[in-house]
Image (tube, rainbow, N blue to C red; front, side, top):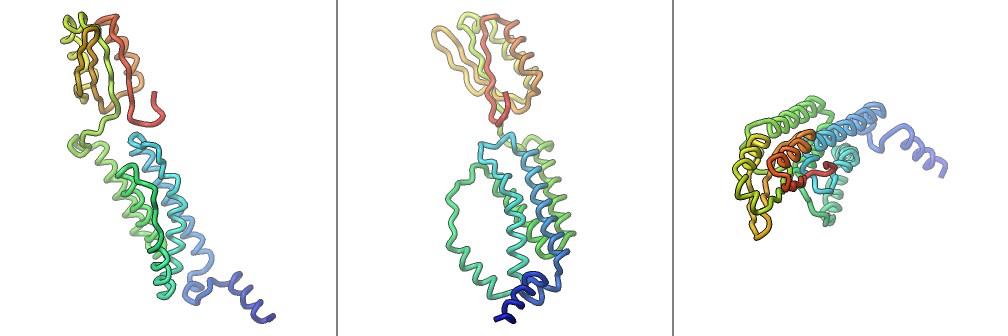
Length: 237
């Protein structure tokens, strides 16, 4: 009984349960886990930087650090044991995640977290650096590259309500100003009734200081115009 207890204590304090895992050592294992955590946090930062404006509230980036650490630990454990890997495969086959993916980009970011975690698990730091670098370059190209790469995703909608009489007289001035101030925008709809005309104008980019300026300029065209900005991103005005 004492011998068995001593063996358990020895395994817990000095080893990892297998000879091959003992060869890794405690300090390298700790460092690789910390590197996996940092990599997942970096992917989380990239998600916030490039896709926070498109988020619908899922905020999946909060799970990236835990995903990275857990995936790295799992792959380190199973790569030294074929029975353990087969057993884990059977166990995970019964797991079903019912939470829907709200943004298509989230799937890509989850795969990046998985890829970086596997790189850490196999101690391939070079591949880890390449994955993160190429990911950043790809996101940068999508954000600042040609317009056709961005598709028709809009940052928001400007709703302008104009009295029917003013719209007949000043519609040209309104549309010319919108094209000048929001050159990447597009008229989505024009709705007319007996009293008012409502113009829906989508825009791709707009600075915060431009919001008040546009509202003031529209009022200078006609003091009867009312304008409202609606954004597709969280946390904006």
